[in-house]
Structures are given as C-alpha cells and as structure tokens.
Length: 89
Image (tube, rainbow, N blue to C red):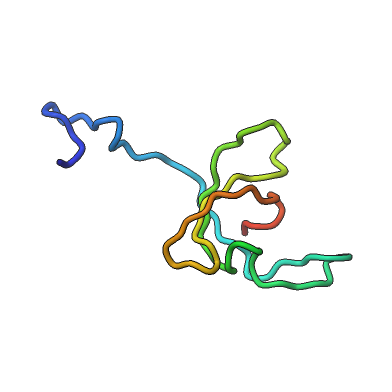
C-alpha cells in the first residue's frame, strides 16, 4: 500500500513530518576552561547525524532531546537528553 486513500489523500500513519537535524561536532571542549578536547560526545561520534525533538519541558532550551545512532552500534538508535551548547554546528 502506498499510504494514500482512494481519493488521493494521505493516511495519518503515512504523513511525513518536519524536524530539525543536526551534526555532532567533531571536537568538543570539556573540562576546566575547555582545555580538554574530545572527539564527538560520550554517546555520539563526531559528525553523527541526530534528530532534535521538540522541547518537552520549560528549561529555556538548555537541554535537548535527541535521537541518533549510538557510537558503538551500527543499528541501535538511542534517545537521550544532552546540553544544547554542545551538539550542533
């Protein structure tokens, strides 16, 4: 089935959605004064594509809910909360 009804309208399950996609920074500064340079984040490799979900709570946008492939897996997707100042370029 192609996701359309007899009159050509899309069914709700097949409708596409828009979202924000970002890449994890290749190098991130961490530690005292940002002197510790690391590749990517703890759970995501540098350059990994993550999908940013809409805000879930009123924290002023300091943290983001993201979905992406975990650093050590080729197939497993994870959903975690990260600080908004780190992941995107």
